[in-house]
Image (cartoon, rainbow, N blue to C red; front, side, top):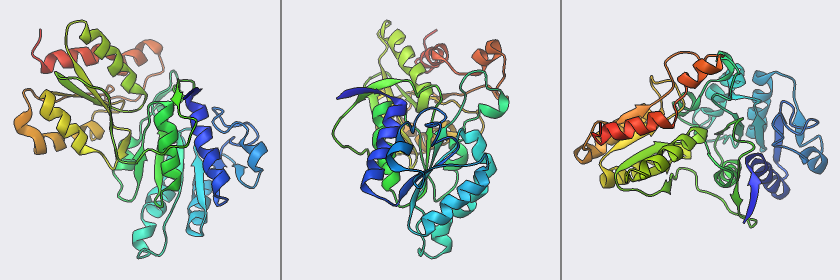
Length: 326
């Protein structure tokens, strides 16, 4: 095992797959000459050349469409958005072409394409650059949605995404690119659609994903001081979702808290809540609690931003709520 940064895990996954398959290429804003906006493609232009590591204008609709058409013709593009906030400009290509082409063509066209880049907030970036779009894309049949929280998962899942014959949305975080973690030096791939129990526990299940799961770890450490045992599940894949892992955990702990960095209406935690009440209602000893951002656009003020985002104190409060502890 070697300790590397999240950005290095992403770079390794892309480079390893590109060495094996010449139909794979990377295209997006600042991916080549600048080595990536967050240095996640560092050195790739030197190794693979400008035909396979391609800088684009700030024209997301255009290069998303080029990627989809290229995938229809036998290539396996990786399309990088500087932020998924910018994907809104190209969302027509993602939703109406990439996601639907296989069905609309009667199976004649697969679209083996990966759209990747950072999602959600990353400090003082303002309302239009701090949005979480996981639930938007997960709402569309035909797309797979992945949100890893650490370098190990990022590398293994990105390799799986690149090899997948369907379009995959791979969402990262600007605030995780410098995170370090152990990653095997030998090749490995993580199956899409499998959640991971990051910490076993017996009193309450906490489900989360992406960078906000760090707040669950902090909360679990503090709660352990009071002999409260938290089981933490990292979804990793949003669609297809591993409902079974959540249900089995709830059957053991009888309580569920969901932590998600997204607006509270119509999000991933809402879907999880429905699935658990439908399939494990009799096992619940308390109503499910979900923790989200405030129901407003992200503020710019650091004081307001701190209040807007969920944190470990919110998790602790929720856990005590479902355990009926004052």
